[in-house]
Picture 1 (cartoon, rainbow over the protein chains, first blue to last red):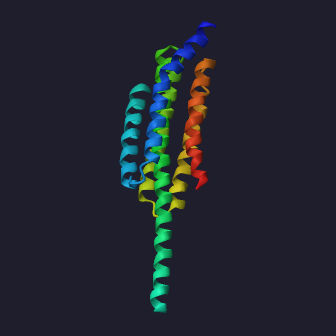
Picture 2 (picture 1 turned 60 degrees about the horizontal axis):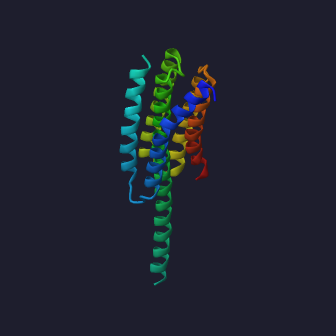
Length: 60
Length: 137
């Protein structure tokens, strides 16, 4: 195995917990019929605010 | 008696249609949240690739700027879905956001390292699949 492939595998391996967390959150939401549009709106806004703040910091 | 039966039938149909509309708007709200989570995962993947020197500083700046724009588009969709009175309006807001998110594909093309590019494109496929789910209702 070359160095680049090994590096990619290590990078992807580090991301596995992130994606598992995403899938778990998605699944949890779909099993909670009592959630309202307001709940989804507020939760989405928090995530998107975080993304925006990180993107602004990292793009300069 | 007949009037009561007719009235209850009309009320049932009305309540059912309101419930359907609400369900579609909630589904749209779920799609926005799932998309936000997937976009955050892409952002974290890109940062990890940049820290691992698989993505250059210039590429990193461009991709993060595109991720910022995609989050803006999802914020617009989030507000539109929140205010939407019916499923069709909510769905339309997500279709518009999908087009803006599509610009991320162009941004990822700047990545020279093929392994990093493949990793980011695979992550982006996850986000696109979530957004495409809006077509199912």
